[in-house]
Length: 404
Image (cartoon, rainbow, N blue to C red; front, side, top):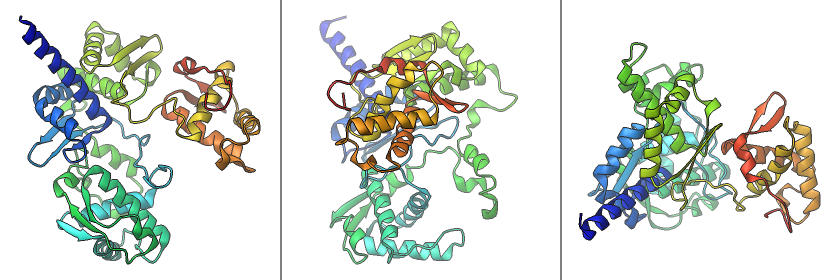
């Protein structure tokens, strides 16, 4: 093979690896939002589509004329560890009210190519008033306007809503704010990745709260894997996809979190070979340990959330609490963890000012433990928080301040 041919093959492999990690980090990429990423994925559409279908069973939709690519990621089991987040106030997760408004706003945006913030708010008011299952929407309430703006800002980041004139945030201060939007209905319709649309479940409204978990599982049910009478090929396909979905989606995959059939698949020569090949093709470094697997992206492209990370107080506290946690063979009780957090607040009085209050140590502990749980670094066993094996790689020594 000539030198030029070798270079072309190497360039294609690098593009595919980068495209895989770009899509894992951002499953929806628009030409307007990131032209280089969009162009790379458009150019390598075929191998990327085949890679995601084979390894994960995820569909990649590339629409060059419409200017977006969408990776329809599906989890075998619904998971709330990656909520939608508010972009204005410390990236707090969406609450029930904001999720409700998100659904209503998306429905009201579909038939209108252009709208204003006031007209859209009026449509939402009317939609909520005519549906007894929805709480009323009151634009005279500032908290309601804040929730509405959080929804609009999220849709703007997706590229489903484009601000033509004005600033969305101005609606928080006044319901008479003037903001003009252009709606991208094609992107809007691609936001829902569930293989079974909620409307197809067809259950009475009154039954939804009682059967919510069952209905949620129903939206991610995939017929390709068969049921109780699944063939060997279907079972192997399910195992491959379930293992690689979790490995590519989560920070770390512990063996004790898997079912017996998934552990057997990973222990088989075929399973190990497929996992290693997928990691290599994606440009990842695969760490194989006795307790589990870890995929590392050296460039951080596929990473939507980082640890360690000094951008948030709770993440700094989580890193610091790992030290006493890993020093305690049996883990720590809630009281011991609060005492550790209290010690940090006393030791660094100019740090974590939002937690320098009577209940600050308790709140800091709660927020830090949520970070550790999200990253698979600690878990609750009985009345104690216990570090997972991967936590020992983050043992630290504090030198000058809490962000060390």
